[in-house]
Image 1 (cartoon, rainbow, N blue to C red):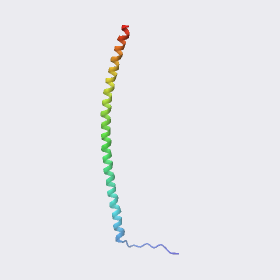
Image 2 (tube, one colour):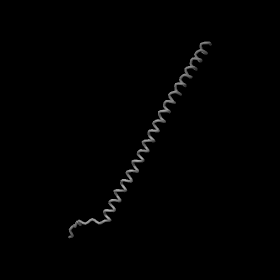
Image 3 (cartoon, one colour):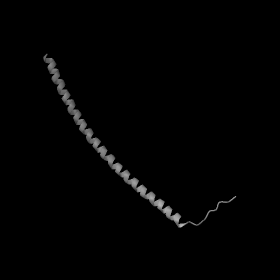
Image 4 (cartoon, rainbow, N blue to C red):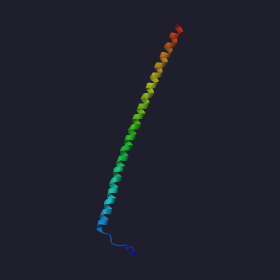
Length: 82
């Protein structure tokens, strides 16, 4: 039966490959960070658009309610005449 043997030497290719893996992780992490920042900006823009649309819709509903109230009063007057 063979016993395990650990070698204390580290080859230069192992060091270089480890450095490359670490560098790749940093580059990948930086790309993720940029995408997160872009998504955060996009989300903020969507929120602003939704807020503007909400305000616009509130005004439109107020105008619609006012128009319906006017039509109601006209119909009431018309019914009273008969």
